Length: 378
Ligand SMILES: Cc1cc2nc3c(=O)[nH]c(=O)nc-3n(C[C@H](O)[C@H](O)[C@H](O)COP(=O)(O)OP(=O)(O)OC[C@H]3O[C@@H](n4cnc5c(N)ncnc54)[C@H](O)[C@@H]3O)c2cc1C
Image (cartoon, rainbow, N blue to C red; front, side, top):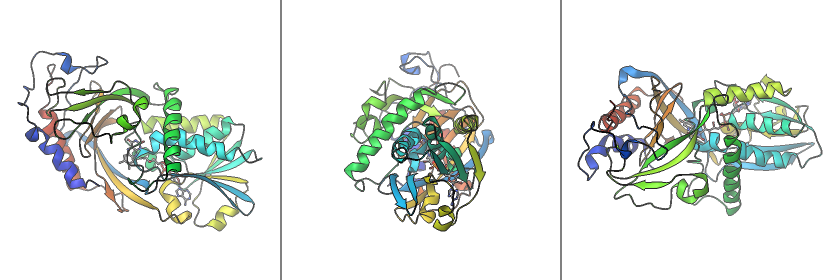
């Protein structure tokens, strides 16, 4: 697992490690200055005085992959739907679709959904679409959930530890991605804060693809894949892997889901559950458990652990319209609520207090990188 320090340093050193001559940062525009869809590639203006906020959250990571399963406890059926690590926004609709398929095998028509993040809200909406009466119970509501901290790139990254998963899980993982891919495409537009965007992922060495990236493993979920050489893109690295994904803005997506949920007659109660007894007293016969990291204590799931991630946001820059993914953890997502710079990836850390030293390293690493990017319009 790559450590945070490696992540930040590798970004800062990327221009120095490249074998190609450093590109002039200005000059006439060429095809290298556009995505394959024809979108101009503009430089991100990075400086500490453009930082508008720094936040951190805990990815609800499960070593063997997320848990979507059903179990009976006395007279209740629990359907689990948690543990999506760094890919919970991406997987939300698809995982909740699988949970919905389990819940609707019972004869009931009413359920409680525990949790009001991306997983709880999508599960709740899908159950409503099946004609069920749904009540959400959650300790925290948007904007105070981990789902609000997410970057929102549509890519199911860091969802399990390599070598720890079963083949049954990998089948669920594939199905959840496939369902989600279709659900999110129905929501593209400003109302849900979902859009298509080009990604540039930077590769080690001479740009050999390893077969380990998600676009290689699930090629039908990542359109417009192309490996670009040194003069085919404006970035200060040799090789870039170009592909398109969706980008989901949590600050738009989650409130829109809440609005749809209320519109379909749902109720939301702010409530924390401390143990199984409290859950058994719920009136609903079916309980969908979308408590994210909360499941670790509430359901005593020792396969889970938090992975802390920290992000800084720069002032919005509407002309920047592409994603950058570094070769060991760097990323930049241009959102309407700010240009997101990531990030850290610290296993087994439980606090969500941002670290100022990390913030400076992330910002400085990105500044060095983007200052060396070629932008003929700058
Ligand atoms: C820095 C960072 C960047 C990320 N970037 C991306 C990305 O680009 N793309 C992507 O797909 N994913 C990303 N993720 C991952 C994503 O944020 C999570 O996988 C996702 O938000 C998990 O959603 P959830 O609904 O399961 O959990 P949460 O959003 O944490 O919601 C859990 C809900 O359960 C409630 N709850 C918990 N315990 C209890 C209890 N005991 N009683 C009552 N209620 C309880 C909470 O209050 C909350 O309402 C990122 C995460 C981080 C931290």
